[in-house]
Length: 178
Image (tube, rainbow, N blue to C red; front, side, top):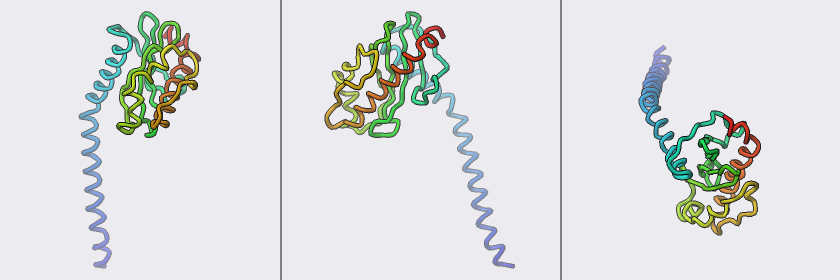
């Protein structure tokens, strides 16, 4: 009889500890979720402003069936910003905003975040000439040369730009007309 009590007591103590830890996590999440959301919106707005200058934009609440699309914003003059998260060397390591002008061409790229290896994969952000290779594209970015030593990150950038252009080209009317 005593051996059963010895087995139950540690289990109960561990269960109580797990419940308390879970409640603390829920409380911490509830306490910080609005601040985190506001910071994400601010970072997105700052990136849109970096692409197009000071302008109003409206968010499109649709990713058009593509999970890599995090947000789409359209300015009153028909410029579109598509936020894409793509795999480079790191899973979801490239989070960029692709600016598409009123003619459907890439007009700029801003980084929201980059989780690639510093000094190697980060070259896709740190070498402005690489980003400029995408400017003016309205179709596939497959012909853009990668950066030596940052092959996975370069491919990730190409995939991110291709994703933004594909979603924009396939859904242009829905995006521009809201």
